[in-house]
Each structure stands twice: as C-alpha cells, then as structure tokens.
Length: 391
Image 1 (cartoon, helix red, strand yellow):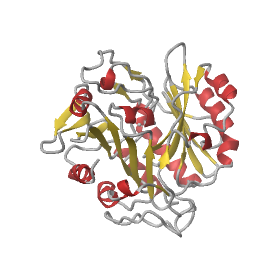
Image 2 (cartoon, rainbow, N blue to C red; image 1 turned 135 degrees about the vertical axis):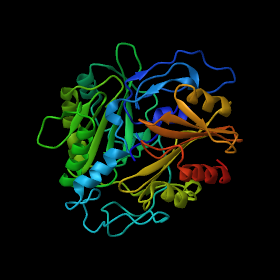
Image 3 (cartoon, helix red, strand yellow; image 1 turned 180 degrees about the vertical axis):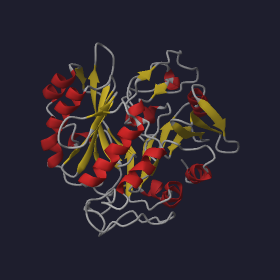
C-alpha cells in the first residue's frame, strides 16, 4: 500500500506529498466557514497544486503516484529470493503478524530506537533537508519564484515511507510547492532497484532517470537512491529529467550527511491506535509519526516495511459539509453509523480514502494506500477507535 491521502481539507493539503497534475475547482467557498485547501503540492501516500474553492478543491494525482497495491506485490516478487526490501541492516526478517504494536527494534534497523516526542511540523522545518539547500540554487533549477510561507514537515506513508519537507515555489504567478523526502528506513541497492523496476513496469511512461543509480521521473515525480536513502521529489508543475537530476545533485551532500531518523516520533494520543493500525496494514508497525500543524491539525502515521496507514485530523467549522464536498468529485460510498457523517472517497484505480466528520468539529481522513477497497472493515475499525479516543 503506497500512500498518504488525497482528500480535501486544510491539514491534508499542506502535508500531502504526491504530485498533482491538475487542480481544478473554482466553485465558490461553501457557506458555513469550511476552511479552504491550502497551497498543495501533493499526499500517503503520498500530490501538489493549489485549490481555490474552499474544501471542495478537486485533487488529481499523477499516474506516477498511482502505484497501486499491485506494485507492492511486484516489489515483493522482485525481491523474493534476493535481498529483502527494507532496511539495509541485516536481520530484519519478515514482518510480524498483524496486531503487533511494537514500534522499535534493536536489531533489525540502524535507526535510533529511542522514541522521540511528537513533531511540530512548522517549527521543526529549519532542521529539514529543505532548509539546508541553497534557495538560489533551487530557484535556478525550476525557474520559479520562491515563497517562504507555510514551510512544514509531513510524512508520506509509502514503500518506503518518507519524512517529507516542502518549499514554496511559484511559477508564472501560480502558487506551487516542491516536496522532498528521504526514506525513514535504509535501502539496499537491490531493494531500491526492485522498487524502481516495479514502478516502471506498472507505468511504462515512467522514464529512466539518467545516472548509474536506478531512478525514474514521471510527470511531477522523481525518485533516486542517495547512499542508503531513497529520495523522492515532487513538484506542482511537473518535472523534467534534467530538473530532477540537478536537484538530486544539490541534495546529494545534504542527504549523505543526514543520520537515519528515529523510528518513532509520536505522542500518546495516536499511539493508542497502533494495534488497530497494525491490523489495517497487516504487519508490524515499525515507523510512527505524529505531526501537528497548529491547534486542531494533526497527522498520525503508522508504517511497516511495505505498507502503512495515516490519519489526518483537521478542525472544520462544518465537518459534515467538508466531507460531502470531498465526495462529490469522486465515486463515494457512505458508511452509516460512523461519526456524524462518513464516506469512502475515491475510485478503484486510485484507491479509496475514508472521510469521517466527528461530533467534535473535526474531519478525519484515513488512507491505507492505493487500492484501498471500501469493504476493508479494518479501516472502519481504525476510525471507530479514533472516535473513541476523542478525535
């Protein structure tokens, strides 16, 4: 399962990490004060652009990001009998059965295992790889106009899962954003090559990124391996191979100097949902991320080596209206008896996201990756657990 949500909503918009080819609703902001979608350049899950019509902004994901669950299976098939996909440190073994709530390991991963507190995505941005790049050099690559507002961090639950940061980069007066991410877990050359091969097989339009290291570029997305870290790049207005190569060259010394991130950066509130999240992804939860972005806006993410699930909570004046705004632009299937209003949003190609309006003036969006089917009762159970926890 490959992704981190695309449904509309303030908290979602800023933290999404997938490239969007098109964003297109100019419908007037709905009455009732629902917050508009902020500058997008993405989600897991991966997703980028800008919507202008309240929470109804129609988000389109590029095919490069539409690596459905079939790609995950292909990665597993490619790596069978060779180097396992996942951490470079020996001894990782197979994922543990569903239901395990262990979030650290002292033998399988090279990451620090001491749990770290939840992150404020805005105040923590100065320590990100985005902050360590020369703004003039980045501007020269894209020919855009840098923007300093809303610099924040996010998590992209993917295969692998990435810690993301964003840089505002407008183009010809249109607001845009660059997202950069490094994999939380170390990657071996074999596991990374298998992931790239699986993506290119699923999407023949994905071009080989020039260079000795396997990589690809397609629409607004590009990926490569720097050292033992998978690196992901998305941009609102598409990418050329030349742009991706130049930006990865700027990132190379920055990423090389970055230590592996802690496996756990989390708070107790979301941690209560870890067991249920493990049931959703069907494997051990190895990575935990909780990120706030001001009062009322929080992302919780749980990931294993090959799958993950995320929940994004956003304060809304009209939560029911916000969820309905999201469903009218895609196939939807309501879920009776869940919160104040709930629906699956999406389609069989891109996958489904579960949107829930709560009695607490909050909208919750859940995504278990592309190919998430509406009959997945485990996702509904995660939503019920979140409601019981007071989200």
